[in-house]
Amino acid sequence: MNAHLEYQTSGNRWPPVVPRMLHEESRSASEEKLRSIVGGPRSPQGSTVFDDLEKQTAHYAAEYKAVLQEIQRGFIMPADSSVTALLTGNRAIPPMVLEALPHLKTYFGADTIFSLRASTDGAGSPILYAVVHWPGKVCDVRSALQRFDDEWWLRRAGQVAGFLTFTYELV
Amino acid sequence: MQGVSEEACLRSSLSRAYYYVFNIALIRAKRNGFVSIRNESTHSQLWRLYSGSPEPECISLGQIALRLKEKRERADYKAVYLRIEEDVPEVLKDVQDFTSRLTKLPYRHPNPSSVRQ
Image (cartoon, rainbow over all chains, first blue to last red; front, side, top):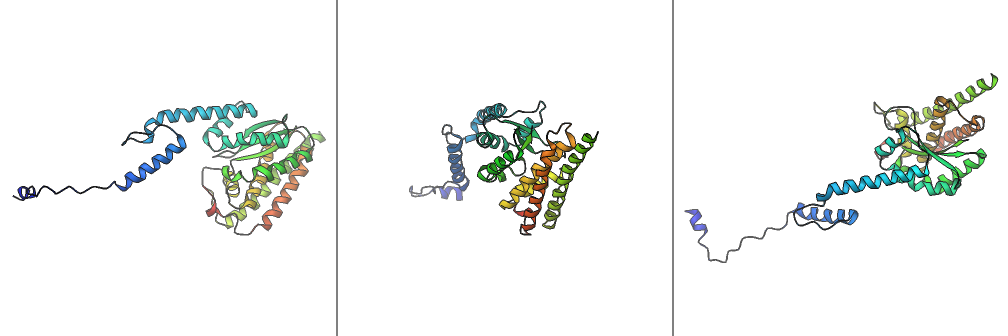
């Protein structure tokens, strides 16, 4: 009976407009933000930016491989996998190492040899040493290191807190 | 033979220099609440505490220590350490520098709760 009465309306009873849910608003905003960072076409309503996740993953893997190759061109790497494993395990380090390379050449010389070495003791997260191989006087390499620290490195060291340092080896 | 024993002394001095720095830095950190977690080297954790601090002086201390650690590892584990006699006096200067900086550092640093994990 009640159900029957419910339909006995004048005909101008419009259903209430349901506003967008809060989570829809925020999802849409964050999707836009993500799109602005990673690019890619606008997804149709209802799908997410993660639709092409596999493509993105492959893109990042290729990008990472390119970074590693660039690092291998600039630094001597050990024959074992210690450094590669370290670089793979901490993705903040490779871009920093790569960014450092032109600065290292500026401060220590374009012909200087640089190498990467992983710390050899202790358990847990190893430390990466970027080593300047220095055939000259010890006072010269130390003053160059001091300038490198003051003008470039110390402002960035916090970003890879304790996982990376630049040092020298007399040869 | 004398040369060999002299090199052994120099290697030993590098190792001791690093451990001196490690110990005074650890005492300070523990006083401020640093607790090392198991299954990971206390050395790595300690230097991450210093290097990850927002206090620039702590970052410098962390970098000095990491460089000393690298020299200590070479002195203890590598068969060849070229020009070690030139390195040792510089390492000792670094140790003095570290000690002086740590002494001047306000007692509240390094603060484990302010370090990015």
